[in-house]
Image (cartoon, rainbow, N blue to C red; front, side, top):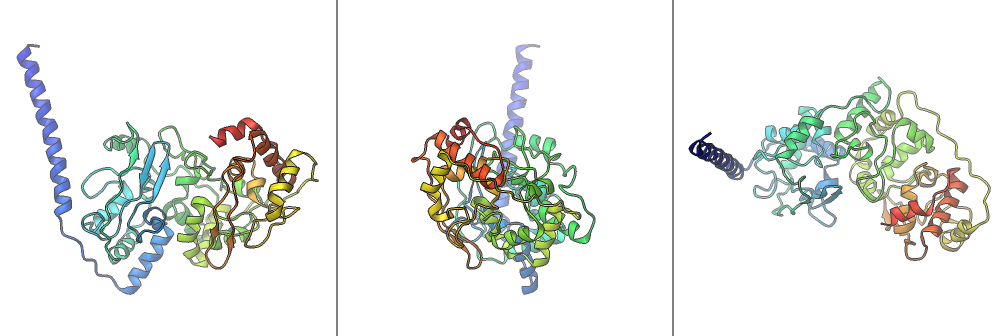
Length: 415
């Protein structure tokens, strides 16, 4: 090919590139210049939309601590960097005030903003793909009738090459597909309602399902646990995983409704879920969630069988550092410290969350209603890796009948 021919090809490529940039700029310009929407809705429609927004846990990602409702700013820490929840108030400049119901439904189900740019999959559009149009429209009506808040969206800290938005198109082609199979077995009306609440609105699999190297959900192992998204692991909440840690229907409903049960207290991200979502649902819907998680024919919960206390360094650490709050025999104190005798952190085959709690401690917990738990200090500065391993091993063996952990495991968690 002649030099003149190459010049023409380069010129055409540059022209196409400029045209794409111009189209993108015009699209964004039009998106920002379109009319702010005025959505008429009855009080009953707005109330239904509010309930569905709670079921979808919209505030969990879009309402920052101390911030205005739905004005964004919540950081989500991922292996690809930090992504912030956006402003979804009806503000015309920084929020979604110019979104029609069609725009809103398209964003929920396809992960594409009104101006055409791709949303990061941190927004759970893969789960929302099966949301009903009626529910989407109700949430849109609720959001568009809230006070607009003129708060700019925070800049994301996503690492290269994940920060290339156009690459999300390829990710969607590969991974944005429906679930292969449900996490439990059932066919009852409650099971079907629970399936929709858990897998679609509640998008529980976004945290509780394993993910691959490119951040894709492992659709063949739904809800079987994930320890790679945050400091605390999202545990296995399949029927098998729940039964193995002693959960039954009554305790699971109590936990979802109030954040406290004999098995656990909601902490970290799950405390936000309980406070902003599941505690606001009807008893019927909490029951349906439980039916789906356990299945129409629940497995028998594994009985907790503590073993006799074994003297050693782990027991000494417990008596010196823990027994003042948790009790000499791990019985706990209501509204002060949890009981360890049936606690899933020590009953879990995965020691991840127990070790993190010992190292980092826990903040004060205020649950929906009157229940609370005082803060727990971390012992990372008081105990070395071998000492933390001894304490965790003693707790797991004494109250959970689980295997010991080693110092190398603690060292990884300490980092």
